[in-house]
Image (cartoon, rainbow, N blue to C red; front, side, top):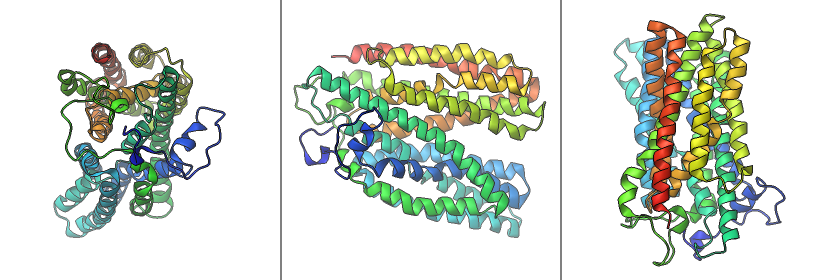
Amino acid sequence: MQHGSKTGSPPTDAPQPIAKGRFAQLPQLAGRTFIPLGLFARLPLAMLTVGTLTLVTSITGSYAVGGTAAGAVGIGSALGAPVLGAMADRRGQRPVLLIAAALNALAVLALIAAAYATVLAGAFPAALLAAAFAAGASCPQVGPLARVRWMALTSQNSPNSPADSKASNRQDLDTALSYESTADELTFVLGPALVGILASLVAPWLPLALAAALTITLVPAFAIHRTHRAVPVHRTVPRGPLSPGSEGTNAAAPKATPRTIPWAVALPVLAMVCMGTFFGSTQTALSSFAAGFATSEIAGLLYAVMGVSSAVAALSVAYWPQRLTLSARWLLGAVMMAALAFLLFVPSSVAGMVLVLLVLGIPVGPVMVTVFAIGGLISPAGRLGTVMTALASGIVAGTAVGSAVAGQLAQAHGYSVAFLVPVAASVALILLGAASAVVLRRKRP
């Protein structure tokens, strides 16, 4: 990002021996404390929606009110994340994360209080929905902003550096983004499980209280971690859009064509909407499928199977050959997703569905890693945080769309018809991948 400056220097809180493996390089780039901080600081976000649903449903006895409150959290998160990302671009990650952590902890505590007040008052839960929206909108975007830091740390060398140095940077970024996708998968499996355990064994308010406690302690630690210095602050956005690897370099460095950027950024964002649609529709259709064999609650366990294979496959991207371009990776993964999604129509038993989901998850992780990488590549200068948070918001918005559409189809026609939605989302990913290939070809110097 900023080359040869103090803000561009890598963290020094870890020894710098020669790494023997791809993932061993990450602590050398960011420091040993960054990875655990980034992992656990994003856990409250994974607990917030399910925790709200569990609390409100438990104390009101209404699935409708609980679902509406959880939906308010999702809408708040989808709208608030890009705002926080834009503020981080303009003001720096540290102050934005510190303020967001304080506001979010207060909003979550207000959400707990509003939930119990709604029951006592017996009135329309306006205050509850407002608190839920505020909790979602203020939730610190640790995952997307961690990706921004990795992109800064892995682009320290100048575009005039030797080709082998650039290849090493690309390899380090692939490794970091592979880890980040796996961390997301892990927290979004661990978060709901933690909510279920605490709510059932102790009290329904405890998961949200724990989320607030984690936010007010871990997010500030992540905010002040020295890796934030590697990310340049753009108080005014430059006119000439640059890729992350060329920001802060001299005027002779190759630049992206300004005309390609405004609509080009929409491609990875739309791709993440499709990914969210794929996730939401698959989970909803699985609920309908599972209800025919046991109870709809086992749909979460079935869905977790796909998450496991997706996470493992995401890690494997670090070892893929560098000659396989980002566009090729996107198209290959999307084609595999579309082809394997048709297997969802085959199983007639839970065991058969487990096998299908295990295979279906294989291309999912690599596609997400690749879309994040492309989003960073075509991001306008000074707006990387905005783009990364917009990509995360796309997943949230898409999940809501996929759940709603698949739910209507499952209710009217059964789970088999509902499985058409993930197929359609995968096909849309292929089309968006082809469009991104054209954009990247035009962008290449």
